[in-house]
Length: 327
Image (cartoon, rainbow, N blue to C red; front, side, top):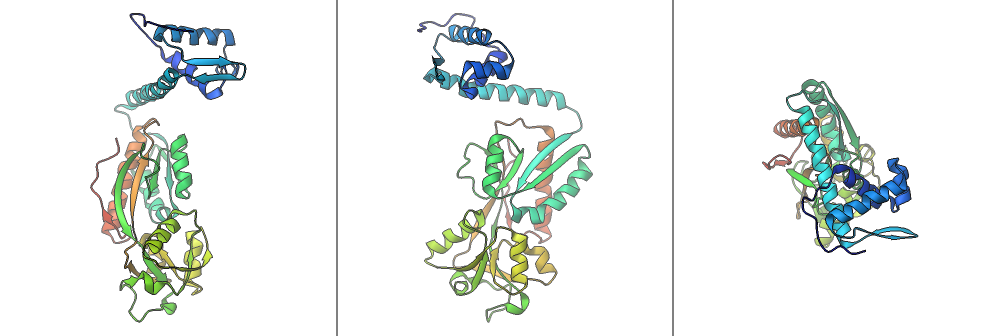
């Protein structure tokens, strides 16, 4: 099949783009026809009409299914963008001037959830009574996947190097602390005084496992400094890590916000890690391909307000960023 010219007055409707995406996702015309609920010959005619309008071949048919041509790949990329833009326009028009409502799903790493989830939920209920906030606590890898497939609207991530195509707002940077039970503090200097990472090395640590973002960060800094840490227990639950350390069974490295309530109760004491300082950035992230509702924008606004308050009150020890809101 060959097409050499594009007819004048070229028009492509949204239905054709939806059909085209369904064919690509299903991998065959028959499967796509069953998914859409139309006859396969009718779907074939839609594709043929689209190819004739564009003047190019989009799909290569074979007994095993269909594959995209280069032109088809280009159209697929634009089709996703166009349909996402249409959905965003519909949502913005529908909600223009209306009170925010609906569900907003928010993925939070456990170290953030411990300090942010409760005040965020309380403030959202107070200021957005018709918004249903769903705060999901998980490791960063799951949050990245959920943002990618559209399962959640917003997420907090520490590392955005793998999701450069996402919209990210830098919220803050925070430094890690060494924590101990009050009666097990191992250094001559008192708690709150900075502790060198090399001085921590001999002591038994409980840390998350290697697939946890916090552990990867700690290991990266230790390796760069030529320091071998003495990790005797691995736990991916920060609550259990804090309990184990409070019992005097081991020591740990955490962001201060993760241990704030335990420090306030006198269960833990700590000091900032130096030589090197282990610092990480905190980002608020969304997938630009997902429809942005007014409710999710309002939850973003409240999130920043709550974080600013937590930092001002010393509950979250961090240096705030003044980066602009997400697009």
